[in-house]
Length: 101
Image (cartoon, rainbow, N blue to C red):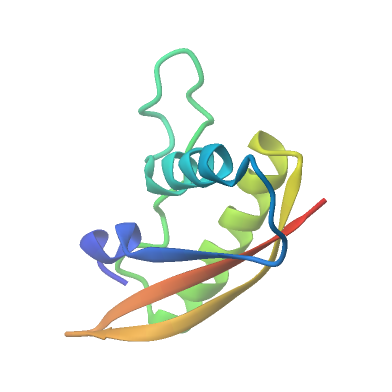
């Protein structure tokens, strides 16, 4: 997984509601922010240690990081699973499936 592939993700929800646009914005911000770059909350965002690791290691670390950070920063939802597809040129694309908590 290379650095540009980190920002290629899709969200899928197992529920519907009026607040979906706000939830989508919150999740997109969390999943596209590098940990340590958010002023006043240096833990917000994803730790990018998985970048440039072998694919299976990167998938595992990314899944664990996303699951932990979503539970911590957006407590109303949980990560149900992360599905993977190939984006070409060795890129991986994560599809994060979200369910209500």
